Image (cartoon, rainbow over the protein chains, first blue to last red):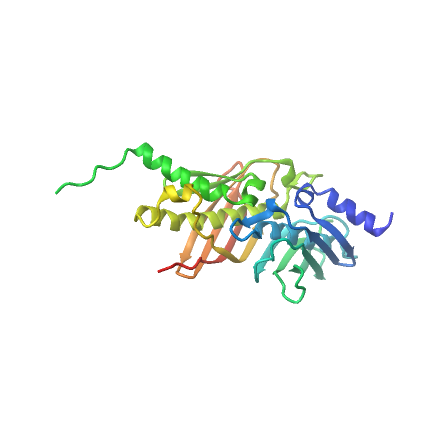
Length: 137
Length: 169
């Protein structure tokens, strides 16, 4: 089975990620990229139509977990130990939010991951995240 | 000196609940998640009724870390908004009926949010309470605790910083 097919099935198997409309577009070697299209139901500020931070955190969490799991030294699943998200600006309503996560260090027990989320304006991040994940053995 | 007769308790209660209801259900993401709030005086408890779409690991099964953090962020934002709205309604600066009619106050913006996952989120209802540790004119710091069956066994805690909406005064 090719990599993109595995990637698709990975997201399809996570009910909450599927409910938020996430699509995994790249994965491997401690890197993952996930997109989340704009949807009315994800709006956090009805006056502006801006997506709620909670939906962005779910995207960040999924992407960081996928990056941790895809690291060559990670044998199996993972769980989040902690995750911090910094919201730099509101995502532009109507635009897809894409997250790229790197697992930049991994020990026998912990995977350290960083992620950046952007909308169409790629030079201006919407949010960044740093997290620690378990390495299940 | 004559003092205005206080309103019947049911009227006050109904107005407060209606204002809270309007604040909460005006946000599509909160409705999508199915989050509700229980009010006892000025104290709020956020409730996340179990739903299959909240699952992150179907094999355990366990709640999604993102669903948990989203829930806690909602508890923090609404908790923080409510503290201010409550004060404004009590001081008579804000008319609860106007809130119900859809004149909602601007919500605080999240600057950052950190979640510690202490235990696996089980496939059942979750609860959260937010404590505003500091709330100035511009910035606020809020701590949230989330639990499931046991109030004493929290399964996640979070801290967030928020930018308060601009006031006209």
